[in-house]
Amino acid sequence: MENKRKQALLLSALVVLGVACASVREPYSTRRDKTAKGAGIGAAAGAVVAVAAGEREADEILAGAAIGAVGGAGIGAYMDHQEEKIARIPGTTVERVGKDALLVHFDSDVLFDVDSATIRPSGRDTLSQMAEVLGEYNKTAVIVQGHTDSTGTETHNQDLSERRAQAARNYLVGRGVDSQRIAALGFGESQPVATNDTATDRQRNRRVEVLLKAKA
Image (cartoon, rainbow, N blue to C red; front, side, top):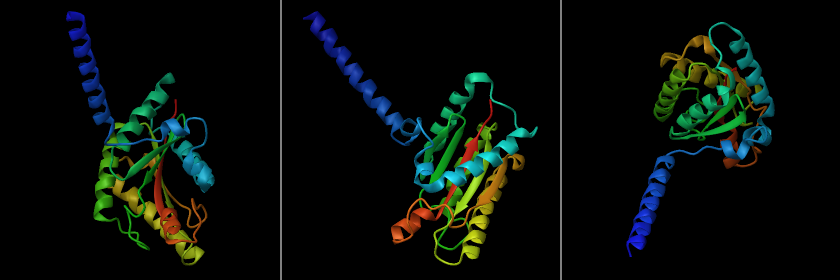
């Protein structure tokens, strides 16, 4: 009887512990486990060029003296911890695109209205939380990347993507992110992640993403 009572108490404790752990994970999500083997969901969907260009820009920043290196084999854990914290920010999804690189996606139109480069109030809150994490993890280069759908001329879309990326960069700098570690790139309509045939797909293509990279 005593053994059965102890087993019941142990089972109850495990159930409570499982619920507690689930509640800790619930507020955020991450795609890290799904993308560990390859270039990542976004890259596979048509953003390969943007990711590669972002990484090249990040490498140039990291080559400078402004940002130190992450010690030894700790770069994986460093990026893991940064990823977990960013993924807790409402409206974001974090994708692992390499051992030393992350790609942060924002929910469609969370930062900007259609055809606008003015950051929305909800977008300012999201970027403020992002800036806090970037301040804590200050050994990563930050590349803000702007994209548009194909509505309008290529020239207009290129200009809009650049202005959006620059606006997000400037906001992050204004919230304390070192200007020497952050750059902005605009890709216009050249790197879609969906067709532009429907309103839903065009919304997916209107996006600002942030690529983060560190060096060992």
